[in-house]
Length: 136
Image (cartoon, rainbow, N blue to C red; front, side, top):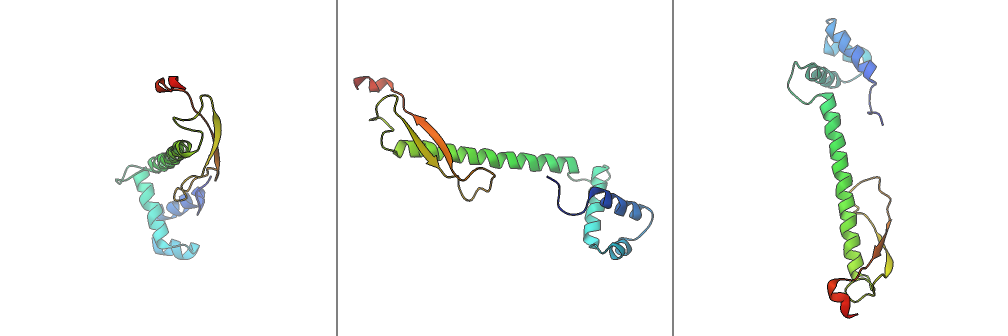
């Protein structure tokens, strides 16, 4: 999955033009791109080279990857919680169900969480006898 926008080689060539002494305004005009875009590229290049404080490109990528994983884990947790809640509310599951009874519970992930998870996830729930179930 690539980043939208201009290719890295194009950005590198724009930065090379600036290093040769061209002004941001002239390069932006000639290439028909925003001067703010060029300033952003220049700033990120300085950060990556250690000349300016900020998150490097590698650090930004790692942070984005971590945020994506956190969102996935939050979705999985929400699905698990809903399945647990649904299995307790489903007839045949709970303290009065027979041991070894199996059933299927369908859980829809929260719509607020945008993930690549399928809209419906099928979970199989199996009830097991507990210590207090010996009276059955």
